[in-house]
Length: 65
Length: 269
Image 1 (cartoon, each protein chain N blue to C red):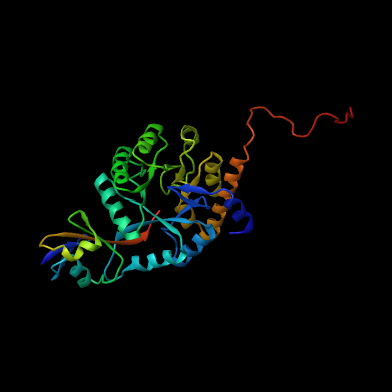
Image 2 (image 1 turned 60 degrees about the vertical axis):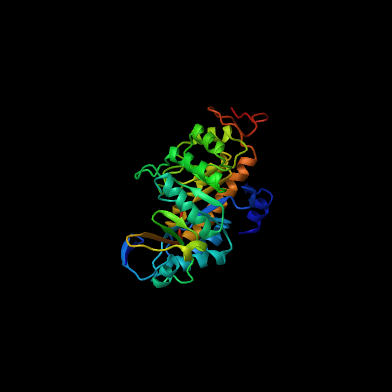
């Protein structure tokens, strides 16, 4: 299925947000997630299905001023 | 930090939302030549609070993970920002994600109104501050020196105000000392932090001499030829400015007044 991850098109097999993180190499990483513009808490990732055309944001701590 | 600095700082702590710190320098973590220099600069600055952000992470490079490990190893408190957000929705969503990621209710709230100056959109700022404080956040708003905006931010629940010295990254210092002095006078009990635009240590000292409680800066240290030395220079300047303020400076005057006694001066003519 085709979705958009961090602004880039991706072809994925995952059915949920947590599966998506595993599939794309984020396993065990400290990240925050949003689906279609709304934050999805870590505890909700297992129950959050991914659908065709979804926009996912995966953010991590970064340098800032 | 050396004995002189730590001794005086201990006697004069500052409090943000009930959290007491001894260093009045809040340091940004961006744009350093290397992670090692960043870590060394934070140590040299003696800062106890550093700003961080959150950005898209690559599942391959995972660069955010090593950065976060470096910050955690330093044992400093983090103040996440909403840098780059231009709408209330963006800022609020970013704040929510930062709270989960960094496990802190603190948020340096930026709602940027314009690209050339990175000037705060104060209307969006007040609206976002209301939403976030209602949701339990402890908001550090990046604002201007406008007194009415400041009042509205306080009414929204902010307990700290962070007016700009000059546009972010400009290094111009305090563009409006009168406005900053006026803000200090209007809100004598609110912790006030000059945030942004500071270029050299004397700018930071000047902010402290105005009675500001702290200074937040990033580029001035990160882009210095020797960031570690500059970090220490800022720590000393902020300490000196604060002590100068507490020492109650003399009044300025237009005409000269001899400092050496006139009485008893010899006459040779």
